[in-house]
Image (cartoon, rainbow, N blue to C red):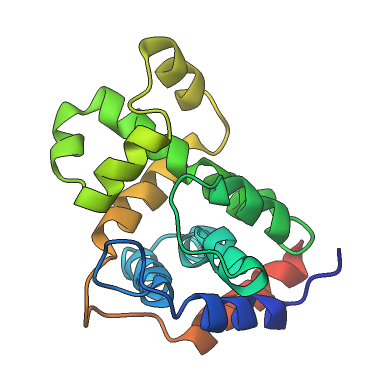
Length: 182
């Protein structure tokens, strides 16, 4: 599959106009808030881009299948697979693991579950619930697990209305810069 950053921008604009499940923000707003938070925290561009694209699988499904946003659709694998021709593993790994990171955090930090939104709690059950101890150990040993946990914590905070957002043009600039390094 040939993929160009313009495809991503189109998917984000068209598919991102949908409300993000039960959250008050749209999907696009959620992703741009995530990217802004990552950049504001001084994280590397690869993680900023991963934060800005972690739910690209949802946007693609809305654009190509008219799908209503569901959080049990393996969007994390779809997103990483879609991005693979364009972006490096430092982006793909956290995107692919961000759902597993939620399950991991619920397993190792019982108070983490208490801070999840109602929508995230609902999707957690559909995504397998908190990891068991063996799953937690296996997840923690994965190459991009720490970045996925950072992405997940940002994801949880980026569901507000009128919160700061990275301009889409800035996210696209960072995507293109990383894509040329691939």
